Image (tube, rainbow, N blue to C red; front, side, top):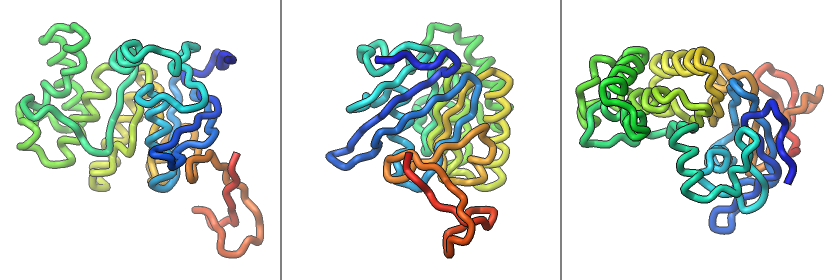
Length: 248
C-alpha cells in the first residue's frame, strides 16, 4: 500500500466495483487537490455515482484504494467511516431527501445539531444559507409545502452549512430549471471558493462541468481521455473539432 501525494486531499488507485456482477468501475484512479472543484463527467450509467460513493466511503471498493488526507478510507471500520462522512464530508443527491417532520431551517441545521452544536447557532447558520440560496422565506415550511426546486435548495444548504472538507455532489441541479440551476451553481461554487471546500461533482451537463477547475470523464466504468484527431468523419467535440475517447 503506497501513500498518496501530500497535495492530494483525495486519492484513489485502481478502483474496481461491480453491481450484481455488472462492472461499474474498472481500474479508475484519480487525485483531487485541496480546494479543487473536480467535475466527473460521462453519460448515465458510466459509473459516476459509484465513484463518488467509493470516494466518500459509502461503498468499499472491491479492489483498489481510497485515501483522504493520507488516511486509508478503504481499511476503516464502518463506524469510523460513518464518523468521517458525518464530520468531514457532505453529500448532495439528485433528489432531495428531507425529514418530512422538520421544517426547512431544521432540515438544514440537522447535521450541525447532530455534531453537538447549540440549537441557536445551528439555526443562525441554517437561516444564513437559506437566504444565500434565495429561500429564506421558506425557512418555516415543511418539505410537503415546498416545490421541487425549493426542496433541492434546502438539501444543498444542508450540505454547505457544515463547511465540509469535501462536498460530493451527484447531479445536484438535475431537478432545477435553467434559471434556478445557474443561481444555485454560482452559490455552490462561490461557497467552495470562500470556505476552501473541495468539491467532487458528478454531472452529464457540459455547462455544469465547465464551471469546474478540472474535468475527468468516465465511460462504461473506465476513465477516458478525449484526444483530438483531425479529419475523423462524424466524430466532433463541442467546438467542432474531430475527437475520440480513449480509455486510460
